[in-house]
Amino acid sequence: MKRAALYARVSTEKQAEKELSIPAQLQELKEYAAKNGMEIVSVYTDEGVSAKTDDRPEFQRMIAEAKQKDRPFDIILYHKNDRFARNREDAIVYKSLLRRDCGIELIAIKEDFGDGPVAKMIEGILEVIAEFYSLNLAQEVKKGMKEKAKQGKALGEAPLGYKIGGDGYFKIVPEEAKVVKYIFNEYTSTNKGLRSIAQDLKTKGKMLFDEAGAKYKWSANGIKVILNNKAYIGTMVWNKRDTAKNYDIRNKDEWITVTNAHQPIIDKQTFKKAQDILKSKRTYRSDSKDYLLRGLVK
Image (cartoon, rainbow, N blue to C red):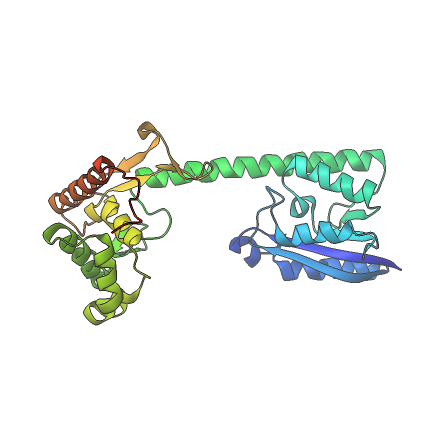
């Protein structure tokens, strides 16, 4: 009796809710194994992971175990070819490795066309289609996000002081807005610095603002992020950083900026004052001299 490993994957919650859910895939894989006299010895599942790359924990564990001298299985069963990989290069590399070097049979149970030349050609075509679908979907998603950004709608999580309303725009959360106003007021109206404000919120945030004051593990950098966030004056900025390049700042002409996108928490004068103070403190630090024993002698 041949030993079979099952591999199932979903990349989104929407897929998990439909017929492609992991339990649904596994059920069909088990039925196929039983019908064809195979013994199931291993099960690998990647939930909420895209197949555009091979960076999938369970997929990599399956490959590592397949490469063992005493391999634990003879066959890998999966639902369709796009569950295995949506990247043509990955599909070629891993299928070649498993079939040629490990002697493991690969079967997409819903796309099983046999082992002949025609079957391999069809498998290749399906892999190309899967990659095209993945790349095209990514472009369509980005296009949709761009249009949403131009309308000033929320993309990603709402910052402290806001929630995302049913219409897709930021709505003020009054209890949290008080914390935001406190931070701007303390920074612009007193001599307190970022670290001092963070420490105050750590020690008495809950007492002053109940749960809203204890929502974050306050830090100097966290306070700085809030002071720099233009969302608090009703402005939305999207596509500022390149997530594919260590969050480097893009050129300004690539940003999408929408003013008056939602109700502000902070007036523009207070926000500008906060920016001026932040800038002056950066300038002060950069102008200070470095001495040989600086930081060692007090």
